[in-house]
Image: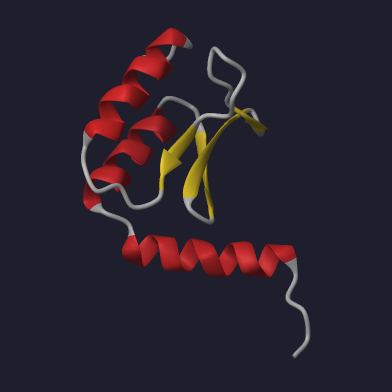
Length: 89
């Protein structure tokens, strides 16, 4: 089987994400995009970018959102971390 390119795998993952994403996650991503951030689907998480570069938390780790969260606790902690970075949603 021929190897698929990275862009092709990413496009395929994005199409799967669009159909399987929970409504609360979609709404939160729309809020992030309205604030000028970009959200990119990766296996297991959503990567948040600012000006094409990964958004970093105060401790230097990249800011990520869970792919399929079981609870809504992730949203509260994400909002707190974003406020620390000066981003109000």
